[in-house]
Length: 217
Image (tube, rainbow, N blue to C red; front, side, top):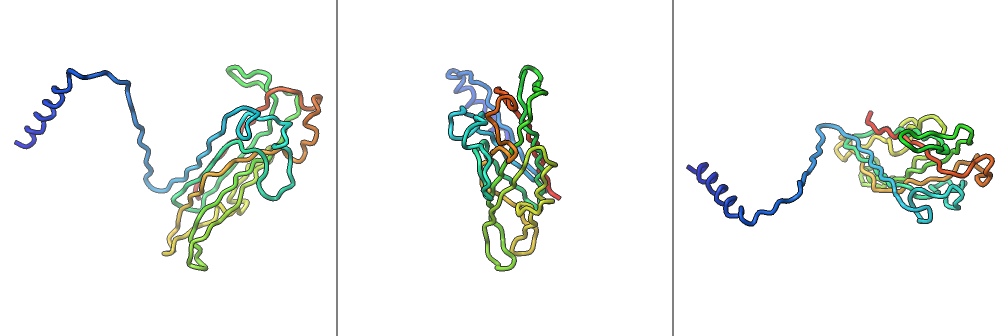
């Protein structure tokens, strides 16, 4: 009897609003969930104008992208990133191709084979909080990944970067990692010393692909 009453109530309510019904656009919602271990790398590029203080595109001749000997992160902010995993260690592998001059950006990008490729450095700084098994307290760990284009694929695990440390909670159980959101920074590599020489680096648009693979072990 209760089930019948509920059905009738819904029909009555629907009928009472039928006169004032206004058709709306379709609204949807995607639901995403994980079952078991997961590892998520989030990166969002910053779009703007070359005259903006951050973002892409930018001027290769700009002072903010020239090579710096600083041991910390340097260069122009072009994106923001973070990494999240419910288990450690993780391995972040990054392959950066050199910048190449574009001569046709139609359906398929065509590069200028005569123009000299331009190498660069990407910095991925980070900070995460973890349990220190030696002190029994929480601590912050900061560092950065330094990726050079044209070199072999960078592996945070092989490089013994702190972002690939195995973390544990106060019960000795394997713990995850969550970084804050930090800027990805770009600067030219040390071998690019004459970027204003148009015979070596013709004027035009330059592009490069960066491939990132994030996984657990």
